[in-house]
Length: 257
Image 1 (cartoon, rainbow, N blue to C red):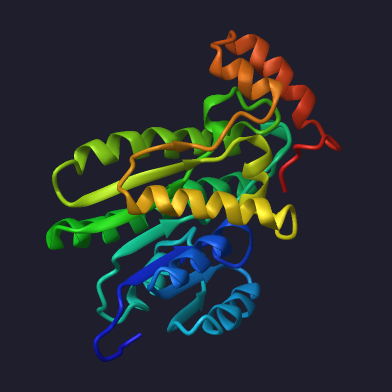
Image 2: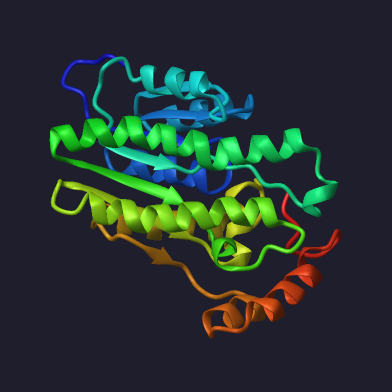
């Protein structure tokens, strides 16, 4: 990533497809060089495409569920300051908690929570020391709902939503901002699935990127289903849990993969 008179650097995780790739495109459109990662080979296809936008692109396939994977990604900047961190990497898991193999459960928690928080601790520490930086976290309205048949995934998103709110307050006045993307039901499907309503994913990415650049500290992109609307209106958790079971059962339109 070493270069003469470098442009600002944006680091994007989960950038192989969906909103993550769209956010990387937004960074390129706005004058950032890129450092991108995902845990799948498609990240190299994304890098090839992004290089066509006349930006420098560092790319790494690594597992951000591990400290070693996070260290590899952060070290790939080769000493360049990361001006913008877009932490979009996440892993979904559907089904009843006791029916899920614990190794899958652990991997979701370590990707969505432990790895994300470790990366933030490294990046935000350096940003605070420099007195400037932008951080974008991908949360979810799932974090506001009782996650019947998706309790682990929704629980990890609840952590990110709550953590982002507290963390941004801790950083107030430091020159570092934290923005949390909270996609509505239909939109959050785009976070991990390529090829679904790509135009919508691009619209969501542009909107949240602009909010991040303005230093806004939270974004909700809209209420997309009756369940989300009920949650916003304060329906009892027992009612929401029953409704969530209906929409989260195998074969439902909102089953996450």
